Length: 119
Image (cartoon, rainbow, N blue to C red; front, top):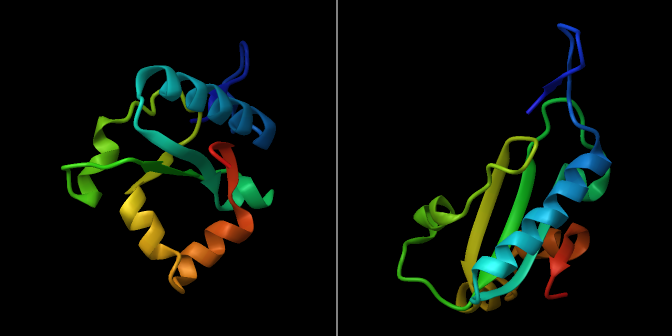
């Protein structure tokens, strides 16, 4: 989220380095709380380096398994420490492996993802 400069009404969007560092801290925190994580990373504008004011952070997690449907899995992950709006996609290992079979999305992730854990 934008932060207010000291003593100023001006809001400033966090720069790419600050967001990437926050993502690294977030990943380390996640790994202390969860033992089912296989991979953690980010993709999109922060991975490509073309982020701008208003860009969100696109995170991806691969976990061993889940009983939750795909669209509800991210709810249980705490993203509050991240300085910009964040989208998190949480795949099971089985789902992730099936994406490798010619998926355009997987090709994009393979080309641009920055893996914070589980290269």
